[in-house]
Image (tube, rainbow, N blue to C red; front, side, top):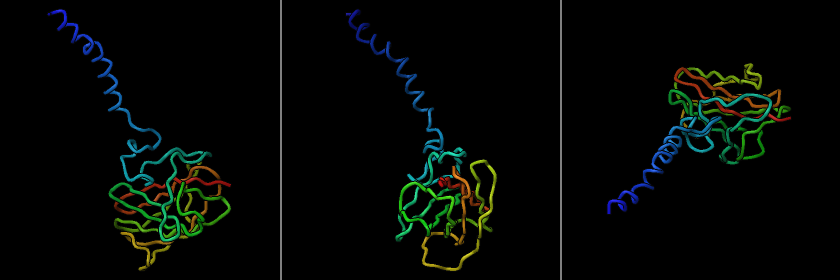
Length: 181
């Protein structure tokens, strides 16, 4: 009887250490390169304030365009509770990866929560910053999202991974986008 009891427990103890190791690794390992666990969550397709790698390749992952009344909309959640929405008017697609061409100027209307003035900066594939072609505060409009509204003109002169950084007094959000020729 004793042998059976010992034998019955032997397989469980034999696999306990490897199972504990696998469980510990699965709990401590998160996604890399801006995956959901590394970014701190957020709805799928929503950029967060964590920047992804810059370079001549595309962003991994790039932000997504979401359909909004016939145009594509960018979305982001940043630090300090900052939330951002951006309508991209020149884009022919309503959904999919946020990809822009280097030959076009893009009109984007932003809604940004928080307080204070909006500062918009483009961070290029080489890490250098660039100001928008234009940025102006808007009054009331038919764009129904929380926050204050601004209009911008953006140009991405070189291919690669760009970050649109939007900053207010209360927080900052980055939106990774890919520029192609």
